[in-house]
Length: 344
Figure (cartoon, one colour):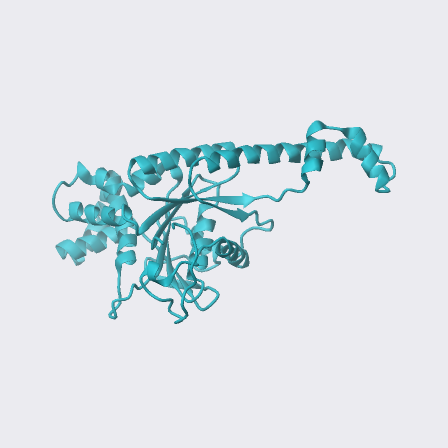
C-alpha cells in the first residue's frame, strides 16, 4: 500500500473530513500517521477541535489500538525559509528577506516554486527515518488542493522547469517527483453522488493519468440512506396516489386524503434522487477504480463522528494491509492483518 496518501476533491465534497478519517483509519492498530494541511484554512484543527496547527508536527488524536495521528500545517513562507537555510545557509539573512516581503513575493510570483516547497515538506516526512532505520511515520496523508488544481499542484517538475533548469530548486523538484510518481504515492478523489462532482472527478482522474500520477481510489462521501424498498420506489416513481392511499388506509391511518399529496411528493422526490444517484454510481463504476463510501453524518462532523467514519473506512479494508507492504511492523508490536485498502 502507498505510504503517501493524497486526498483531493471538488469544493464542498468534504475532502478534509475524508483526509482526517483516513488518517485515523490508517493509524489503527498502533501505527503513526501524519496529516498534512497545505491550504492554510486550519480545517484539520477545526475537525479535531484543537488549537490552530503550527508549522511543527504535533499529535492531535489517538486511534484504536494505540496508534497516533500527528498533524502539520505547512506554510509556504516558513518552508522557503527552511529551504534557504538548508541550501544557502542564509540564517538571519533569510529572516531579513521575510521582513522585506521578499519571501511572500517569491512564493506569489512563482507558484510552481511554492508548490515544490509544500509538496517537498510532505515528501520529506514520507522518507524520514529514525536512528533505527524505521520510517518515522507509517503513512503521510495530505489534505490537498481541490480537484481542479490537483494535477498542476503535484506535477511540480513541469511547473519549475522554466524557472530553474539546474541547481537546488531543480534537484528538489526532481526528488519530489520521484516520490509522487512512484508506488509510494496514491491520489484519492472525494466526490458526492451528484452530477457536477462526479464529472469533475472523472476529469481529474483523466488529468492525473495523463500526467502519469498514481490514482488510488474514489471516496463517495455523504451517502444518504435509501428510505424505500424497490417496490415502494417504483410506486413513488409512478406517482400512484390511489395505491398509496389504500396502503395508508390498510395501515389504519384515517383521514389519509390530506396526507396523500405531501407524502407522494416526498416519496417522488426521494425516488428521483435515488435514480440520479444510481446514474452517478454507474459513471463512477466506469472509471475503473476501487470505490469507498462514507455516510452522511446528520449532526455534523465532530471528533466522535470522525472516529465513526474512520471505522467505516476500516470496515472497507483501509488499514488491513500486510506488514511487509509498509516495510515495518505496527508500533504496538502486533502483526498487521492482510487485506486490501486504500491505494492498493
